[in-house]
Image (cartoon, rainbow, N blue to C red; front, side):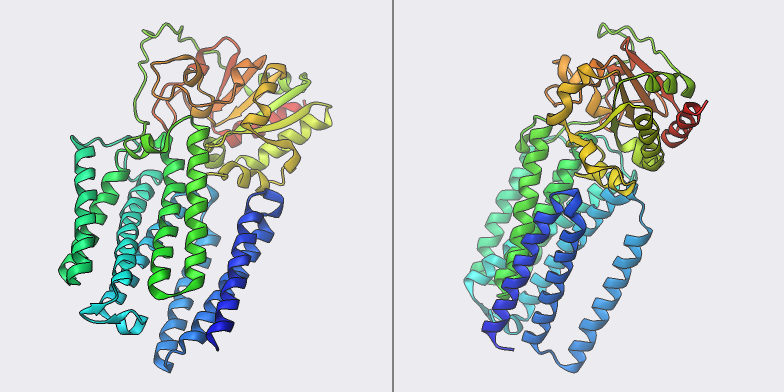
Length: 466
């Protein structure tokens, strides 16, 4: 295959990747977007193999690697529940980071194979690209591992604050710059691995102080890191497809991180430098809140909703854990059949990954025109008879709006407390993922429906038939 034709095919795959991102930006076109992405990746892989012309032994190893990786990916995708999707994404990001480190190491030890010079005489530009790729890749690897452990509950979601962490991180950053310069000047293997070690440590130190409430931003940020690592190595390898793909992933992840921070009214830098989440509000009543809770049962909720004119449903991670989306769809259908207007309200950081709630609702075939983002529906809560909150804790906490001393003050929330009645489904009165007490529980218009989200919703549906 000629280089010109390969460049053309890489360009075609890049266009397909762009179309994939465009498709994934809207639920109705997400399946088509996935298809574009798969076709684009298939073209890129075949083109790379045709251009590289590996030996039979090398080709066999490549096919074996594709078969093993593809099998693991396919099996994992089929078996993983939607509730575990955030930690799966974090785990996959770690693999991208690790791959970047391994490719950079291969280029360092066998530069002739990559066309970047010879051992002891590697092109300076390639060394810079290689250094950036391996540093970003190593940071992505360990940072993603920590994010996975936090999201999967194997590590506390609370921030782990090290004394002088900002100075340590700054020192490591300066050390990385010095080491990269030294690598360009000396091409020392020892310096190369010192860059890897320093970056691995920095990845851990960047993520462990970030609390649960900021975890959606971390996921999108690590996505961006993995893209930039791939793009940097794309330059080293001279692979146009890798450059395009990495730049798309890196830039889209950075934009998404900005959108998520905007949705939380927080600066990206403040999240990276420590974040919040894990602070526990006092439960003794010294904040002036009268802590009495009104609880109800499925019959009470059914009566209130069947006699309402407008109900706004607010899904959250609790719905995902209970797999209650299908029961929720059935409840909405019952209400609509009774003449009740039903809408769904999605907060930008609902769940533990961007778009988590949208995917779950789409899985239950909830009509797309009934699902609204925060800025489009928040003003409607004041006209709603019932706000049905199913497992969404932090994104409905009035402290973010009313309490300047709250760690989440300033984060836009769904104003469910402005509805005539707020029905709040939750297993207990415990704090949410951010570790902050929700003052919504104690407001006069709130009725707590304590129990499993799926079971409670199913009981409400049954009560509607009586």
